[in-house]
Amino acid sequence: MKNLEQSNYSSALQTVRDLKAKYGTTWDTISPESAARMAIQNRFKTGLDIAKYTAAIMRKDMAEYDANASNYTQSLGSWHGFVAQQNIIAVKKHHKTTSKRYIYLSGWMVAALRSEFGPLPDQSMHEKTTVPALIKEIYDFLRQADAIDLNDLFRRLEKGEDVQDQIDNFETHIVPIIADIDAGFGNEEATYLLTKKMIEAGACAIQIENQVSDAKQCGHQDGKVTVPHEDFLSKINAIRYAFLELGVDDGVIVARTDSEGASLTQKLPVSTEPGDLASQYLAFVEAEEITIGEAKEDDVLLKRDGKLVRPVRLPNGLYQFKEGTNIDRVVLDCITSLQNGADLLWIETPTPNVKQIAHMVNRIREVVPTAKLVYNNSPSFNWTLNFRNQAYDEMLAAGKDMTGYDRGNLMDAKYDDSDLCRRADDRIRTFQMDSSKEAGIFHHLITLPTYHTTALHMNDLTQGYYGEEGMLAYVKGVQRQEIRKGVACVKHQRMAGSNLGDDHKTFFAGDKALKADGAKNTSDQFESKKTEQKRELVLEK
Image 1: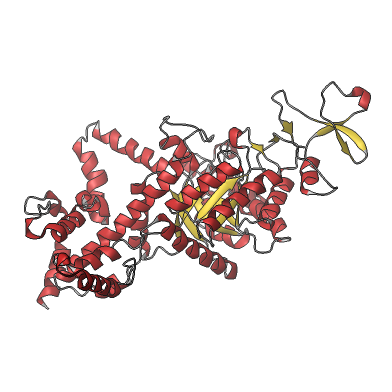
Image 2 (image 1 turned 90 degrees about the vertical axis):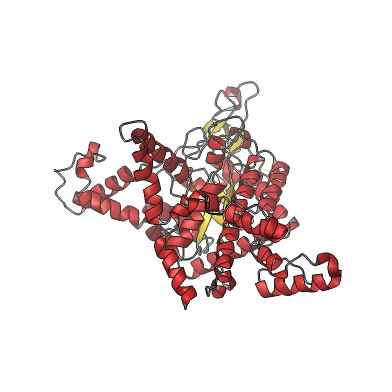
């Protein structure tokens, strides 16, 4: 007997018919049409189904990017399943396909918004179980979006509309998630165990950074402490083993290096032969030449180029890297990760500068030609000021008269319509395309966009609602915009699954079902008259 877990309606229909024939009259009240409809409305039965499906998408996208760098991918960070759902619904609505669009799960937002301890900084203090729980939540909401849209299509089919082709070729809302595991939340075994939970929830891509787990800092803050390469590679191995154990052979590992902004290491690795990875890491550590007589009791000493040196050690026991070695460390980190199982790179940078990113990537590609990045288009950057400064420098170098600009005050709104600011905005607009072609960026993400949009929208709504505008602030700024822009959740009862539930209750209880949809359902006020007239014309034909 065929398994009912399939997306083809006719196959699912035949499967239920065969089951009815097998079990006889005890299944008389089961409708094959209803059961098949429910089966294809829930195409993905488990998180592993999702992880395998989305991993294949990412691998395909990576190959297409290698062939043509204009084929870059994008995502927005989401801190709730509803936020992710509305993101992908809007993607389908405005761009007609989810192709090359993913979701990013940010450890920063998990810490700040989802921890039971309350809002926390991005320092791996939140519960590790929150991460797989959010992955599952996001996919629950995306699967519900599938079910709601397909249910609407089946309703239209029952009314005589010709939508069978839309049902047969329905594009799912399920897209890849790149999920942040921070520094692995402990040793390599802890990383492996958490990775399994994340994969079982649906994650096909795990992003891990080379910081010390118990000293982890946000990539855009100071005080970052990195680990030796061997320690980081053991965690990459742990993630790969987790993927393989669960049968996600195409699972993607994103290796992030924080070395550009990190100046400290907690540990001095053991070198077993000259030039090995440990030796290269140790060569970056700041040290002073001394004699054995100058050594203090319990000092840590190294032999370097035939001389005795003492690593610079801070009062907290951490060791300091040589100033100016950060870019060399980034390049070595990236090459080493790619040569030892990582698929994609993530380099935290201080500013979004295409030339600076390309400088590092080109050095990496001298050794690994297919190296490509996941890049954080971070809200921690002041994009406006960064690109206005870049435009200022370029215009100055080109001999333009810059006396009309105050270099120390380029954020001033009075410059918004100036030539400099138009140039800067155009560079921001094309940043993703330019950096994908010139700097090897395969995937562009914004880590915290929905954190900031929530704050901004609440600021605007509360300003008017608690002021003179009162209810007009909500109607004009929210509901009227939802109606005119066709935002799905304006009919929030439908979005929460009310219509879907009504149909299911009808399948289960027939005419005895108590349904929410009816003459007194106020959601009907949002039904478009144009849509209704169009449907009536179809039925008349």
